[in-house]
Length: 302
Image (cartoon, rainbow, N blue to C red; front, side, top):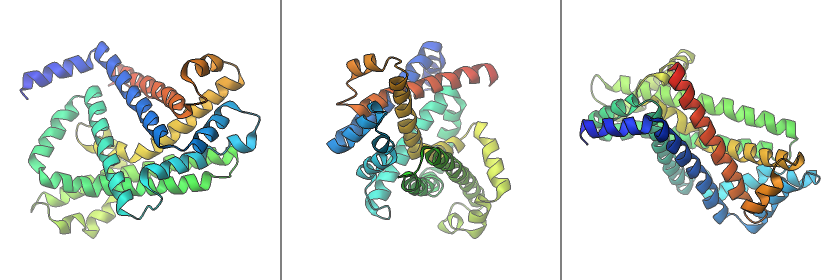
């Protein structure tokens, strides 16, 4: 693509109307993902979600959202984590997350596109090998961590569920920083003699990836133009869905409890028959608002 075409696209995306549309598109992707998710959910799961959203007085039923999410999670990735089915689906999710991350970071910071394109062009095949080591595999472990989190959250109190979600964020953040550190260390280890398999599995590379100083430096380079965001943010992919599911559900529950537009929302979006789509609509709105907030902050601060 000619440079001037890319510059034109950059100007359009970074204009206020372009950013408005980008936020709407991102929110729409989230909404449609929940809609697709609902299409594979069982009727029993849908009923449980509806009870959770609309029946605040049946505490024993409504506090089982981790169980319902875990069952739908298994429908997407399979019940056995140590299987090719789960690994391949996790890999697909990783590349989808990388694509979304690239588009979002490009819209916010267009220099990322130029740096990422040059690195992909120079690395070619080896770039995807690095992605496998520094992204796909860590994301697979992040998916496993989410499974454990869901298991611990089942049957616990509301306070413990909140603590589990906080623990999920801390562990996922650690995995994400390791992804960046591992990617940077692997690239540096391969610059002298070219990338070889032994460099990917080098003890020095693996140990440096979990070094606290390396993790700190990994956090520092996230604001620099480059591919670091492509290694960092996809690690949060499954956890984000968990947070959006829980957060959006509790927003709808609060609206029901305090009678803030719940009846109107229920009439127009049929929460009873399409509870996951309703959660997805709220989740998409949250994502869009957060995106616009980040854009505004970046505009005035960055």
